[in-house]
Length: 456
Ligand code: FUB
Image (cartoon, rainbow, N blue to C red; front, side, top):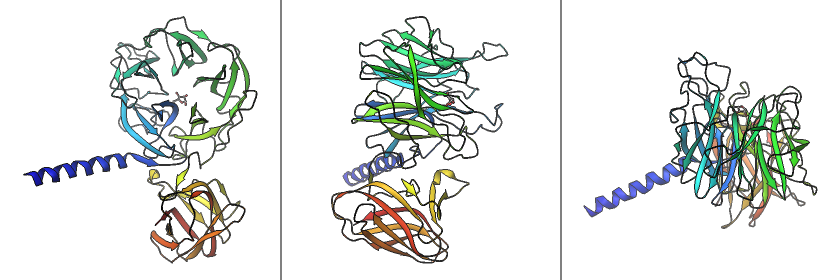
């Protein structure tokens, strides 16, 4: 009996460990690897970063939905402490939860979440039920409340009165006054009551923002007494991230500059948040990494953001490497490179019919290389490298440190094979430290690499 009990307990522990690991994603950009995600609102709660994104899906068959448009049924929340290992805490709110939302419209667009007095307030737009009319009644903004950032969230019975719009964003100012921003052609602001559920002032249009070209997705934050009104705006043909600076949460804001240029590959939307975590500022945004041919299936990314001495924001260049220090003993996806040779190296999906299986690096010519920055070697000395590779001709890869010495730490002979294999090779003793690595094809024909990993 006691033996059985122990066995049962061990089984439960194993199931929990498996469940936690299954939900953990080791990732650079995009950071969410198990589903499409967009419009990330990043918040720091209890020493972790929580990302509340929209959840893009393909329009389900058999529904009266446009196949070429946004389709969003629910929200998940994700969190991370090191900005590399992300946990999917699962679904928190769906279109079937709020009784006022039209659960056939798949319109759960960009959300936000803030904490006040130990409660978490999750703000989300959705189409309001039609009340028997032919036409839908536009977008309302609902609130769901929880005791923990992961939920469970309980949706309020009505959307916030006085708002017709999308893309809610909430700022709680230093004096405790909360403001809600949203968009609908213009960008609006109103005060929120202490209960965080009702407006405490008439909605006001934020003046002095560009009048030509679509604006949406406001994100307002304060730093050193400056209030930043940041938002996607179509200055040319697709959205770019712009900002204005002001002295008060309700503006006026003086248009100041561009935070991120238009997507070089044409993803029409961008939508972002700006957050400080452990003394570093970050820009969360989205791009259609997993869906290059359909830009309504997007993915959340993060890159570092820096301010100039006068408070202006330096333009952020989107990267694949993203942020955070990668652990040498976890698989390192070198296809999320920091730099790549101008020719000879390229990136492709591992399986284009199953995109969440990720990408591979293809070294086509000798001398082709990719560089991957910030890999931490710590604790026990790591003595070998594992490379998941495929090469019909066989080839030799070289791993070199990108420092002044440029020390070669390993040469790995990848044998000829038509299937993926994990090849091991020795590395010369690397002391504990954080290194930038270069992977180069030294000899032989084309080699494809899924990941590299260091081990004892
Ligand atoms: O995700 C749907 C909509 O696309 C958002 O609400 C907008 O900000 C844009 O990103």
